[in-house]
Amino acid sequence: MTVEAASRAAGTADGGRARLPVRSGSAESSDGVRIAWEEFGSGDPTIVLLPSAPIIHSRQWKGQIHYLSRSWRVISFDGRGNGRSDHPTDPAAYHDDRFVEDIVTVLDATGTASAVLVGLCTDGVWRAIRLAAEHPERVLGIVAFAVGVPRLATPQPHYVAASAVFDEELPTSDGWAKYNRHHWRRDYPDFAEFFFSQMAIEPYSTKAIEDASGWACDGSVEAMLADAAAEFPFDRDGVEAIAQKVRCPMLLVHGTDDQCQLPARAERLAELTGAPLVLVEGAGHMIPARHPVLANLLIRDFVRGLAGTR
Amino acid sequence: MAVAASPGAPAEPSRARLPDASGFVERDGVRIAWERHGSGTPTILLMPTWSIFTSRHWKFQVPYLARHFRVVTFDGRGNGRSDRPTEPAAYADTEYVRDAAAVLDATDTDRALVVGMSMGGAFTLRFAVDEPDRTLGIVLIGPAVPVGDRPEGTPDVVPDVDFEEPQDPEADDGWGRYNAHFWRRDWPGFAEWFVGTRVFSEAHSTKHIEDGVGWALGTDADAMIAKRRAPRLRRPSDWPTPPSTEGRAIAFVRRVGCPALVIQGTDDRVIGIEVGRRLARELGAPIVEIEGGGHAPHLREPVLVNRLIAEFARSLAGPASVEP
Image (cartoon, rainbow over all chains, first blue to last red; front, side, top):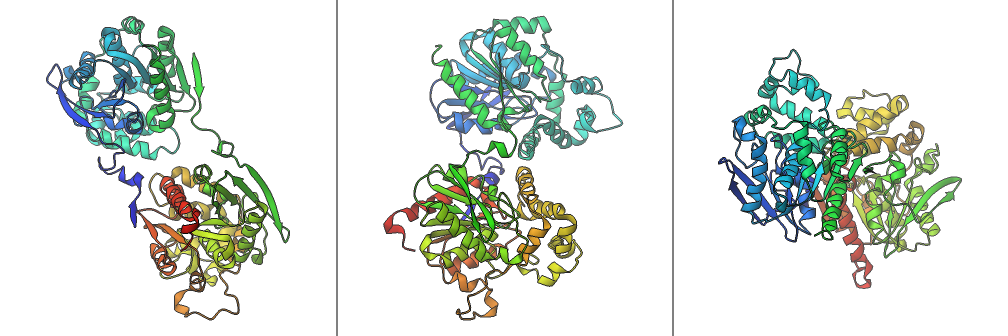
């Protein structure tokens, strides 16, 4: 008898997925961009796993889908700019409003009246907050990992420094100097590997880094550049006003060693909303990938807790 | 409100399961540390392996198996909480077999399913031959049992002279490090090479390598050199002489009367897969080959190996299924 080890099988494209979708499809968003979604399991309420930035796609939730879908209906989708969704290259396609609309598009396409939203970083967390503020009837609750709400506190200093010279040809491509338009065009896989080595900063993260770098390369540099060029349309007061409109239950989970989002953003959002904040000691940015059992149990307890509030 | 959650903690204090009982047995002045976990039938004895690892190398088996079975482990002489004698005779395979029997006595265990990895496979084989009434079955993982073909340079084919005389470390694809002078000069260097490139050949093994090198640093060159010089698989004088081409283990293999299972990675860089295949044929036992797996599948593919051990243990439990 020969068995193929599960961990290696999982590395081969989609062949090794722990659970295959029961249904999948592609929905057209308001600006004509097609968004690819998948549905797993059954059970109320529905949990929607939101995309993060176009550097990654829905496989980022590989450590959650097969667990959560044993108890609930789970929807995931590839964010515009990566995976099986369209990869538009016009910055207008990456406006904040488009990301919020994409969530609604997927909820409608899958016949989901309302759902628990689970997101990571800005594209997941901030857009979930906006949807909850603007269409509260669609959002039962939010689990926010690596709480990426722009403006609430200063960005990581290495982003500030790199963004200031993002369009310039730099004399070096060491470290965060890889976060640069010209380096992306020259050697995007090198940037991706560096970037995810920072996002999965915990020891023993080689598999998480390899996975995520591979998903980055499923996307495109032009989509990344278009996303980077999109202006964030709110100032701090605007962000805080929207956050304070959220009425649904919310759980915040943040790593103390997150290299993408400083914990101060999570702390400020907790102050504004009264949401509980779980600070994970020593964890980096990708808590669902690096601490899947912890992440899964936090989501489970949150979803179970909602039953009493509805 | 901020709640602290800690996904990881320091290595040893964070054992997933603590033993229900532990103690020492002493034989000829050498103390052997054992632990017992869980309850259920049958008892599973997880054998020590080469003294480069302690019983912690079963860290992924103990917490799972102990939920269903009674599990006994002990640190092999030369590492862990057991003593580190420096006389070669103290490291004979027969000493490990007697240690195992003494640990079974100390834990009130009549008989057990015995599981051994690498050199622990040789100890397990010898236990099955010397203590047939106490052996319900055996599982041999990446077994260092000298039958059939094996890769050039691997430990069991390194001639004594190559071990004892100074060697170029890079000789034989790096196996020149398997050498008494190298070990005395740089035991940590050997441990890092052996654990980091030979035992764990799979990608994403950084944690396993760190663990394994850490266990290796619990012993030293003196103990390991004594172990290398120890008698192993010596036939009792009343056994007939087998053909020299069949390896010195064959006479033992053919005396095993209990059910057996062999588990091995096809990319095992310490003990070639042909060894496991030949061993399985000789034992009339099934072999589970893990495609692309290395020398320590119980650490790199623990779920698979745990389920194989559990399934095998259950097949032994019923009176009707004890027959080979």
